[in-house]
Image (cartoon, rainbow, N blue to C red; front, side):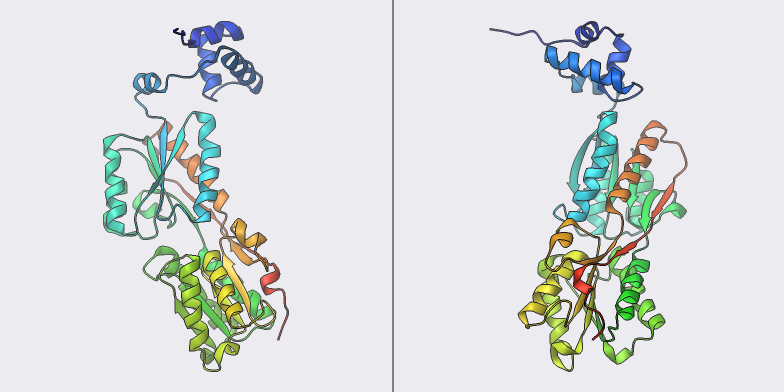
Length: 342
């Protein structure tokens, strides 16, 4: 037994509106809320599903936007992806998630692959940026928006944040609650966040007057919990007086901070009474962790939303000038530092 697929014309007739209005309502563009509800109800009654292939061929668009990141398991990117989807979906776009790899070469190769036309644009959040990657973005066949470094001087639309300033806010907070023996657990220094956060930490401890002999720095292999735990063990073990030498640790992101807390517990230390811990990114797991994690929010949702809005403008008018958006950091104090001075 065969069934006849409902057409757009039949949906329009059922809803009692024009064919053009039906199309706009189904794609979430140029239609009132009442119109959208009316047309979608008619489509549901008829079992109508859009012909995505036909639509793409007619409009010479894929209605797909790629979101490319180094680590799709990082909760920061998950929050960005949700925000990007929330902006793009009402305009008929699907979000395709991709991994860039951990080198600028593999990232540049991915950007070059855009010339094959499998997406209408890409939002990319690279850990590392070099001249080749910048050149590939500039020459890409479709619009590219970067979440990370501000790249306006290269004619690239980007959404940036002040992670160096965010680390500074964490250091000032620890100094204000009386912590004087501070460690910094960073990720790789050859990454954009690693370089910026190291710079922010160095400037902040100088400004707050921390004694040089009471500062310890350790570098993790990447920005994960496992790498944070391993590096935190080295950080605590290297302290001249044992673990008690440090009464605070600033971690370059929340995943590293969770690794720090685990390492502290292995040594019988209490957080925050013995050692206060701060992170960065304000991911959901940090908010419900025990103790809840003091963190610097870099506005993951806001950055994702801003990038998607830039992408929409560029897909509508690829020739417009590059735009830059900056999202500021915000320190959120929770239980992992709420122990006062020692």
